[in-house]
Length: 261
Image 1 (cartoon, rainbow, N blue to C red):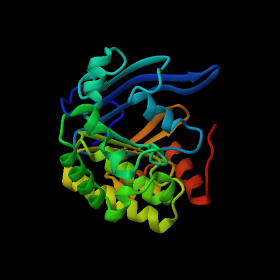
Image 2 (cartoon, rainbow, N blue to C red; image 1 turned 180 degrees about the horizontal axis):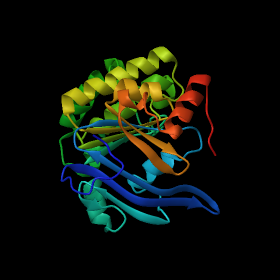
Image 3 (cartoon, rainbow, N blue to C red; image 1 turned 90 degrees about the vertical axis):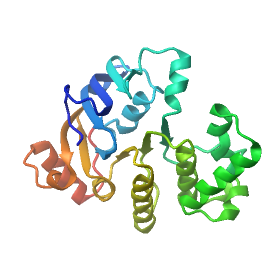
């Protein structure tokens, strides 16, 4: 189970301590603590402006924090050389909001990018692997030869998911996977994430503003509020929590989009 702090467990895949992020005078995170255990699916939720995506980008090394520590699979993310970072990156996959596909490459070529960067495989084998992942995420076979601009938003997310899975990583991080999708496609994507987790048994972290999606996808939820993780635990229990921050967030979520700047 995800927890705010658990120093004793050896089964923690991601450990964040006292994380501080700021842009100029605007403090985004003010002492974030979070543990994510191996094999779990956790939804990190919070309103617009709470810095959910900033935290994701900091964990994967795309943003340098002001202070704090981050360990992923036992490695210190903030103090490693380029070679060690590259090796660590082969153990995680990231699905960004719109798939983050290379516009000049076909879907199949996008999926093959990590294989070309990290493995020496024959072209035919890479094509077969890409085709398998395309099928697994529910895209038609003909999508392999299409360019991102020829796909719908939902299809781009599925293609990005296929690329995130191609190395069969230990950790997969989803940045607002339901963003821009209607309720039907959101439900289908949530089901797909669950299905892939059952197959690969990895650790899945879903960053979203939609607590309903987080509840649908994962067993655990962590609430990011005013710069800190204020509650983390069982998804079902979260909805009956007496924590005033949780109650306020749930009340706002029920009424519509909630901004907490």
